[in-house]
Image (cartoon, rainbow, N blue to C red):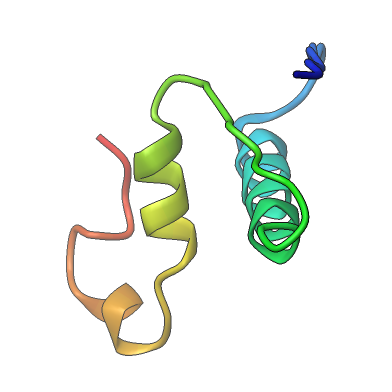
Length: 66
């Protein structure tokens, strides 16, 4: 098992969300070759929200984080 730790400083919440979504895309593409695990607070919520499309985003109050 190999392990990588990434620490980010001076990153906005929008940049952090985008970073997590991009890492998730990489994880999906590499599933055939290697298994990745990601651990961070609210990761599942971020991925679910970030993968919404079209009409799913127009529903009132679902775009905003609480």
